[in-house]
Image 1 (cartoon, one colour):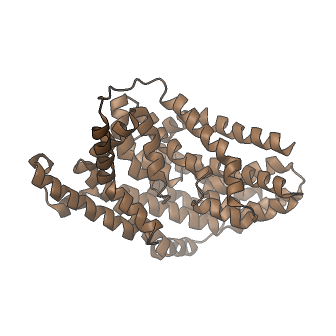
Image 2: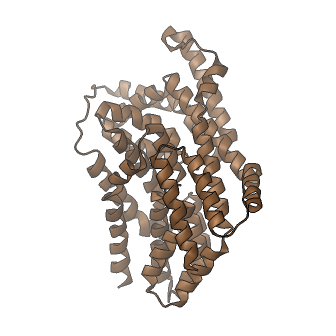
Length: 415
């Protein structure tokens, strides 16, 4: 049974090595998936079937299309200077570039779509440039300030899954984890923003401030439409994104009539085509292939059951199991889906069950977050052209500190 862990380590090591050599993460994952399958006795025919299944399954297709559309929307908003004006309006509203770079990824993070961090990359890039923040820190800012919401946002599919499987009140869970989210924002500010000077902000009167709010709403419409289509109309995200793309084009047509400086002198279809980033689509496909290979290996789950039977301390077992599940799968949900039914029945009461739930949730989240397969991380690294080892250096203190906050809550409340 230990063989499966060894092969996972070998596969992950090869993936990390290839990525460090600037091989596209998607291709690296495909190679890692093939090696993992072969080391565990799977045939070439089996691997071919996994590839065929991945390329044909609706989830892969919709994810690839969604990521392509997100890239197009971001490109249009950037090219047409819509995003720049949205950022300027938001900064005027908040009266701080630092507050803007902290809040913008969180606002866009409410989209809660896989790879959605890509949408906030241009915002962080622009503000990071003004604040003179290095690119590796910009990448960390984009990811940290987006993902802190995952502990408390009640519409998060992961939190909903946790509440359903754990059979507890979702608001009790959100309140329990609220300090963890706050800690992530506070530590993020001190590690990534505190030492940078605010650029000057012009003073404005009440009338100008109201105008600023309206400007922000107007220029954020492409993102708002993409969000509202999902929440209010329950549309697939890629369909909702079409509305955002079309609205960006309409805004540019309006802008060109008002001022010729917004005329980029390029055919609309050509601009859309330039917005597609093939490397990001390949990354999506690679992640899905690797996940499908891992999901088809029952040996992983057999090994976890074996650990339970050994009488290992519960907290240590949760930590190890979360690592073994969520790190290679780059997802919090499998950790919850597997560990909640195994661990929560051991809780003597509702209060302890909530604490076990938090321990599993935060542990699974942390290993998902640092996984090289984490899609938001993959796309952010591609966008900012940052090496993964440089991003990990920025995680060196903040993630352990956030995890310690969870441990303190756990220890205090369980006593």
